[in-house]
Amino acid sequence: MKYMLMIYAGSADEAQCTFEDWVAYDKTVKDAGVFVSGHTLKDLTTATTVQVDAAGEATVTDGPYAETREVLGGYYIIDVPDLDVALDWARRCPGARDGAVVVRPVAEF
Amino acid sequence: MDSAVFREERGRLLAALVRRFGDLDLAEDVASEAIEAALVRWPVDGVPDRPGAWLLTTARRRAVDRLRRDRTYAARLAILQVEADRADPAPPADATADLPDERLQLFFTCAHPALPAEDRVALTLRCLAGLTTAEVARAFLVPTATMSKRIVRAKNKIREARIPFRVPGADELPSRLPGVLQVVYSVFTEGYAASSGDALQRLDLAAEAIRLARILRRLLPGEREVAGLLALMLLVFARRDARTGPSGELVLLEDQDRSRWDRPMIDEGRALVETALTGGAPGPYGVQAAIAALHDEAASVESTDWPQIVALYDVLLAMTPSPVVAVNRAAAVAMRDGAEAGLALLDELADEPRLRAYHPYASARGDLLTRLGRAADAAAAYRQALELAGTEPERAHARRRLEEIGDS
Image (cartoon, rainbow over all chains, first blue to last red):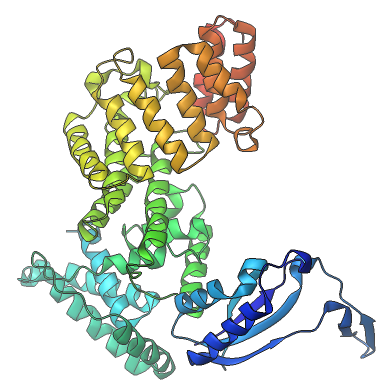
């Protein structure tokens, strides 16, 4: 079963995890054979929001600007047997120490 | 013979079916069908030699029939099934029963930390205590439809997020077992000290918690905190008859008729306390059970071993720092060193946000202030307790105290 580990960043000034921690974690995920995909997102200041209204008119705005703790900084999709295994990968993720990792099952159609 | 006879079997049956089919809904449906079939057949054909095996065979046959009819359902479960077999070989059969006891994994699933706390309690009562949804709803004073929704939501999450049916490994057990014990203990406290309603105690719920703890004790005989939890509940429950007066009013420990305490239950609890406290550092349930045992062993409040109780509260407070434990400790200190000393400790806790809505804190202050002859302050404390108390007997107690100190 596939799960998305959504990595919500904590404040960058207080980050305790180093770049090396992330490299090591990334390697562990890939070596374990559970890695499906994963990316780090650029800073929220580079984000742009698109909304289409009822008339079909698109509005493009800069942002969003969310609370720091709500910023999605990256994600992994892993393929593991059950939630306990997924939660264990989340627990080991450096992002869980500096912010929070939300684990969501991926819907299959 | 009615379905209540099958409550014990139902949990076992459900656990065995869940392990085989990996789906709680299917397991519940076919377990009920098998029990219904037994209610029809057994009075006519006689009870089979191995009733548990008969139920399991019947339920499995129904499940297989259903899976043949519904291919998409079957396809999904087939995947689960392969993984369930790989992850978890069948435990050895219990020599004394004809149905293997696989309930432990169901305990861990129902108490899984990924489920909301209230759902854990509801699921455990539904799946392991064998209560109907309506009974669980009554126990928590919510409409059946509300409880039904809650249980459906929990079962959905188990299925959709694939919360596994498994007993955590030795490395995980220390972090997961407290969650299971917490569920059982919260069933007990809701039964023994109801948080709301007209009745102070809902004893059937407390008895249900004790039954669940007995099952856990059989399944995890080496876990001392399981022994500690069972001991604690027995030692507290032993006082149930003395704890309410003729019209349902609250009777405090100091005013209870101790001859009405359940002696055999106390003896059982005391033996378990020894198990819980032997062979290493004790856990919080073991220590609380030891405190309860000291109360139960004493002939009166005056002859209670208060120094020992204070010492045990110190241990408990170091283990699980909590303002609620600190309130209890202060009350014990008041008994050991006098009301003044206890009140000083209570007043140190005045700024604790968690105690602001905790009526026993206000009551404890009222009690010590009364003993110190500070009637006006005591009345203020009891008025606060009256405002905060959730059940009618607790409110009545506060009102009585107010009358006694001449303030109403």
